[in-house]
Image: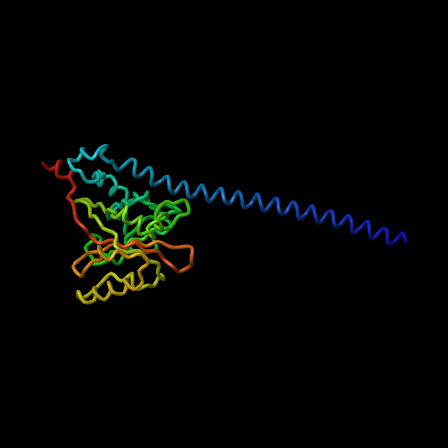
Length: 270
């Protein structure tokens, strides 16, 4: 009938319109997500660029090992005066394979530098920062250092490489530079823990308390180097970053192996 034909035509037209609306909506959503991804990528790159520029302008590695008269790895020259002029919260500079090369700051709390860069402006990467509970001179039995696990591999975004004992043995140290010299830490442990784990303990009233702590982390260890394990006289640094699994955190722990005075400061004073 004429009425039935009219309805069929109407529903056919509505179906075509509906399909066009869905198509346009999907196209719009694709454009929106692509634009958002581009914007986030730019934020990551801008954040990364701030630190690359900071390192280029304020640090200098000797061209050869002979430049500082040693067969060991070259000592990095750092312009502490210039850096502290930019941010008085500076407490050190960390270097670690494969690409960790950043200033370390300490805020009044452990939230301030989560999304602030070294110059205290917004930076999606945040800063590498020492726990506000620790002594800024790196003398605590356990000093906690936090950094984001960034998707582009910046900050502590490549720390998961240390889940391999083979990688640790190839890259056994990380370095903390200060105004007076550098602390060389030998990696002895990595593990994945909850964010409220006992691994974050930093203050110990007695050596027995510290010994108990070392026993606790040994039980939770993912990759442990027993021959490098610290004793109660040692000082350790715990590097902490987030994982893709909610409240889980990945930790790298190193014990102080040796301390070297800044050779550039000695030359300046001679």
